[in-house]
Each structure stands twice: as structure tokens, then as C-alpha cells.
Amino acid sequence: FNVAAHLMEGKLELVGTRPEALKKGEGAIVQMNSKRAGAYKDEDGKLHVVDTTCTHMGCEVEWNSAEHSWDCPCHGSRFDIDGNVMEGPADKPLQTFPMEDKA
Ligand code: FES
Image (tube, protein in one colour):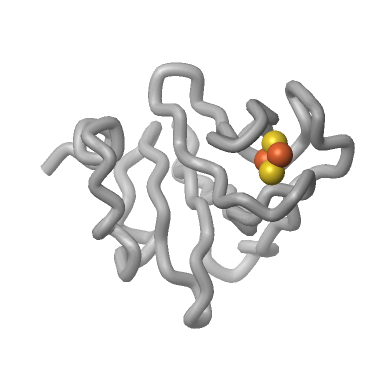
């Protein structure tokens, strides 16, 4: 099962996936505490989880498996795996979910 390929096909039925189920190097939209979230598992197995609500005007960012970034379809803002702004117009980082207990 290739998470990245499914995401590229625009299938977002991955909501409900537990972030722990991701393979290293994979990102996906997941369900965290009944909330939509974006999860990425890095090569060390550490999870990076962001709120997928864009800080510009509230669209839902999507995983970019080629660039390992969260991209907003509305006005092109881009965020890194920890939610930091890579490209505007957004100027605030995505909110993150602390993952100390799950890494
Ligand atoms: Fe995301 Fe505008 S809402 S870039």
C-alpha cells in the first residue's frame, strides 16, 4: 500500500489512518483526536504532526510527497514538515501536535 501514490491520485480516504502506521519517509492526512491532521514520519521514525488548516485563510493543506512539504491549494502557501512557512502568502506557521509520547 503506497500512501504517497494514493495521495497523489487525490484520494484522501486516509483520514482515519493512525499516524503510527506510516512508514519512514511517508506523509499522509490522518485522524488525531477526532481532528484532521497531517503526519510525516521521518527517517529516524519520529512523527511530525501538523494541523492541516492553512494559516492564511483556512484552506486544507495537502501533502506534497515529492518535496516533503504541506502545500495549500488555495493561494500556494507551503509549509515544511514542522509547519514552518516555506512560501507565502501565509506568514504564520501551521499549528503542531506535540508527539513526545508517540515517537
Ligand atoms: Fe492557504 Fe491562502 S488559504 S494560501
